[in-house]
Length: 437
Length: 145
Image 1 (cartoon, helix red, strand yellow):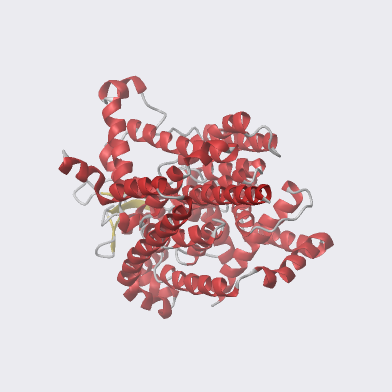
Image 2 (spheres, one colour):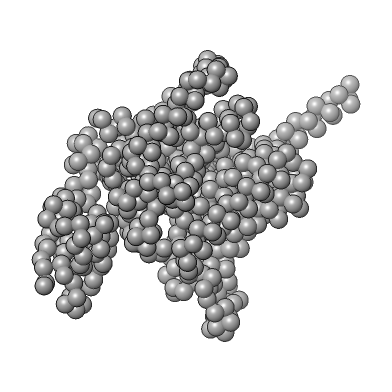
């Protein structure tokens, strides 16, 4: 029971940390409640705190974790304005919520909770590096050379391992069972962050989304976190809050190298399409700061990269590029129609996007998200071409998981184009009525 | 030709093309109907396959009510107990090899033995350089030197 309580306090502390970071550093003492944003910023903050601890040679022990948590909770208690905002939010909550929807969501969450915690993490990738690195950092009280080089591939980003380390310090032991609370909350917040109830429902009943959380072989992987961060980045891009997009794309790249192309493309997209938006300069600056952090970390440890340390001339000579790219495209086509994994999720996305094709080009924010998605698929084409493994087996073992990194974002985009069209149609109808009068 | 196209696209893409064609041909009022129908069908199919997954997973939920210790033992096939035993008997400076056994138990034990330096080894490989050999299959540990 005590472990459940500690896990709950951990979850609350991550929300609180994200809220404090947002309030003081990003909103400059402004307050806008968003559970997904707070959770994302909280996860990112614990990773960055540990990276800073490594640089300044401060061990990450239970004392470090307790001090940070106490400071966060005390800040909320001491800062009257922040406390008032929070109380206001809680007081307004009953008026905002739909009891029936909350009840259904609660039942669903309870069911998924039982399914998730019926097994512990038991998958190769999680135990070969993700949570194992987290355990190694826990044993070594922070990032150490020994732990970094204990599990190959060494160059994998460390956000998820560092978050698990933080949790282990909280719990006082490394445990593959209770650590599942982190992907569980992340999964729920992905759904909640999809804005419209009908697309939330489509996400929650996507079989593979559930599998990725519940199945022990996938439960400790990082794909769900990447999906969450890319979704938040797109969410704020569509809202015109470019600074948050830069931050969350940065956190996605600190979770998995797969998102690095998105982060690198972001400044270019921002300069071309988003120059008139609020905070586009800080968004670019923060994204570039994460690129520098990532490159600096990899340079310090002299990491190699399986996909970049190649003789591209020999790859080009050995592999006919057209055939290989076509094979990957065919794999996408085949994967989209695996209904036992995706339901008709991809069907709906393609339908919504093509049936509202005019909307895609008419709005710069929507276009920017669409280009990010294009960059994601383009980078996959490249990775599956230069992969040192056999292309077919690499695609077979990873494509479905990798697609989950972009799936919440494409659902959000589909919902956005549909809702935007509805709004425009509504405005036109009203205008026509006024004219006829 | 038709057979080949059907293999490539099947009912998934054909129905998508039909729905799109229908969407562009019908009047504005019916467009909404098609969209609602698409969302409903999508939800139903997703729900159907999710339920298949959940039902197939159902028996495992009994573990949830038995407590987390039991869950860890069941999922790991007792490897967690073995790891605890190894933690007791092996000094922190120990190093050696873990025999490959269905991948996951091997990487799990390597992880749990940290900071001891252990590497995975094929069963048929030369183990003469391994000071300690851990066999996840038989829950056995022995010294070679």
